[in-house]
Length: 201
Image (cartoon, rainbow, N blue to C red; front, side, top):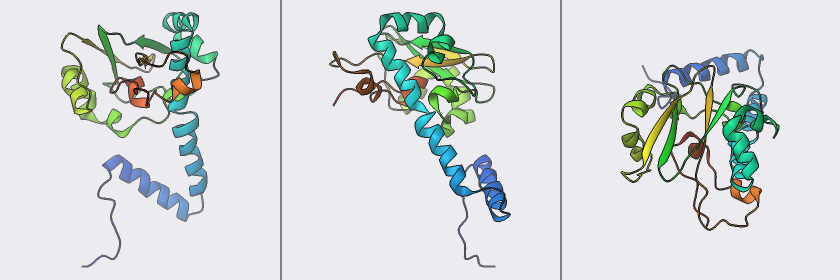
C-alpha cells in the first residue's frame, strides 16, 4: 500500500501525540492554530528566557539585587514582574570560578516557565534526567562545555516545591554595559547550566 503523505517520524512519541491532538482539534474547529502560535511565541520570547536574562543582568550590575536574589530569589524575581506558572518558589545559584551549577529534574520536568519559557525537549528527556546526576561533566561536554578539572560541578534537582535559576558568571570586557545589553549575553541554556554566558562580540 502506498502513501502520499509525510509522517512525523522525526518527532518523539509525546510530540507526535501532541501534533495529532492539535490536528484533530483544528479540524473540528475547536482551536485556532494562529492562537497556538501566539501562545508559543509568548512563552519562547516574552515570558521566556528573556525574563531570566534580565534577572541575571540586573544581578550582575546591582550588588544589592544580587544579594536579595541569593537570599530570596522568589521575591527578587517577582519584584521585576516575573511570576506565575512554575515560578512561585525559586532559588538562584551563582556560578563562580570554583563551582559550576547544573539544573535537572530527575522525577519529571519541573521548570521555571516564568523566567525560562518553554523547557527544551532535551531537558525532559530521560537520558538527560538520569545522566546529569551520574555524569554531569560528561553531559556538559556533550553540550560543548568543557570545564577545568578543578571546577566543582553541583547538580540541583528541581521539584514541584522548588525550582532553580543558574546565574552564570559575567563575561570579562562588559564593564559599563547596560542591563539590556548584558541580557543579550544570557541564554536559556546558561540559566540551566549547560552553557556559559556568551562572550561579548
